[in-house]
Length: 164
Image (cartoon, rainbow, N blue to C red; front, side, top):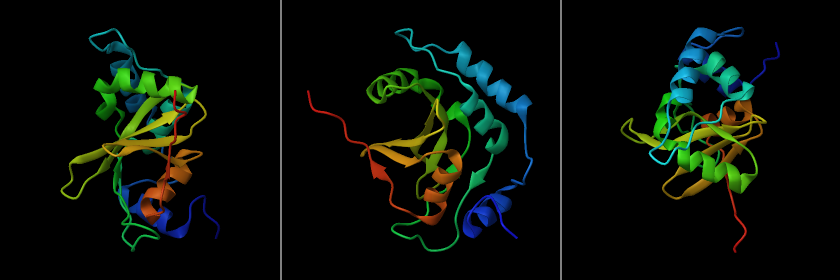
């Protein structure tokens, strides 16, 4: 049987409660409305686009964690909850300009004690990035590949920006 995901990722998703066809558009719209209504003190607003809403509808509310040893580093649990990025509108707008796209929050990577350690975001094309204290990281060309990066402990690619 072929699956959409590698075996370890499929198992982690199913353990988290995901199944093919999972789709909670009602919850995705609640998150979209909350993000749309929020503005930073300086007036920055969140970008909303189909790739983000679709990711929230399919994976929203899940805590996805790998159980096997990682390929390059320890697997990183992810919580798909865009409200974690509510107060990041300015940061996402700035990074979006640097990447020449728009970004929306996806959720968080969890640290060792379950606290958020990085913000997961995706762009208009569906590419996923992680923002943490050490830099900005490219996790994959879509949510599926980004989840595979996190679950399998594959080393992400650090984003490099041109020096001015």
